[in-house]
Length: 396
Ligand code: PLP
Ligand code: TYF
Picture 1 (cartoon, protein in one colour):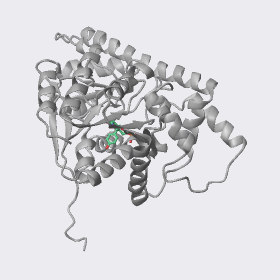
Picture 2 (picture 1 turned 180 degrees about the vertical axis):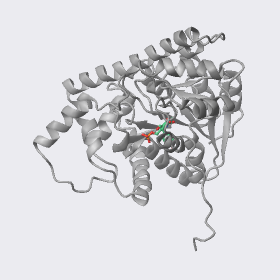
Picture 3 (picture 1 turned 45 degrees about the vertical axis):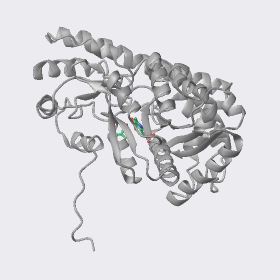
């Protein structure tokens, strides 16, 4: 049965990790995978998370099955975070939210649900996008195409192209949009451009699917969430996948959610019942630990304040690394203008380096980024940045 099974290609990003781990270069730096490290180069354990866990341990609870849609208080906390405490949509009970296995789980549950209710739809993702978007929606049975996004010449976004693609898409097309901190480019559209995207989705009757994996890493929790408010205000129905992997540094706990904004309470109840089928047939019900931590932090004022401070520190450190990168590249002798790095936002920078240059960086210097030229700025620190800049200067 298995003798003819083909060897599947490695995940282009996670595969790099394996290569990095096997590299014996003592100076090696991993800017491949999108993970935030602190200035010591360590994966942080947030203090708010530790405090919540200490409280949990002081009164340990048994571990029965969770409901299919997860911890009710978690789902409510997610709604308040994503839509805002004062959101009429939440108050009216128009949002169906389920706890999922990370943001990826939210995307997958949403994809399965959409495939069931609109099997002939196609999916549009940005060009380029997080590689897993294409894989995940294809696996759910959708044809996946792209809308223009990054323009290398422009070092920015081909917004006219993006808008034209949306305006030309057939009714019912699912449009995957990065809510903030676009992965992999680091370029986000402006609030005014979001208004045009919302209008295009409305006039073409498209189905927006917002992927919110980096809320709080761009301009702030509320600022980054503002795009959700624009879609709510438009009266559109849409989906939002939430990830707490980065914002809580809880990658391995798999904490995420899917929220579907519906037209009314009754519709939301019906949608929720379908989401539960998607969950049940995939993994039955979600795990307890990470979502309990996130619920405690989001709903306990002092833990919440601590989280907002710690998230703010991560956001600020990334911005400082962007500034330092520009400065130190110049100091290392790079002649071209690299200030575009500070126009980008979130964890990533599309550096503009070619595949050959990225391969050289890896092989000669042990500096790992993706072949597309993406580098994770959140993995730079005061100890590795000089070496990274000198290495980049050499391959440029
Ligand atoms: N969506 C985007 C754009 C991402 O970059 C990531 C990164 O991991 C995810 C979704 C998945 O998040 P999670 O690790 O919570 O599944
Ligand atoms: O883009 C990244 O690096 C992160 C982490 O299959 C990631 O989003 C990468 C690949 C993947 C899952 C997560």
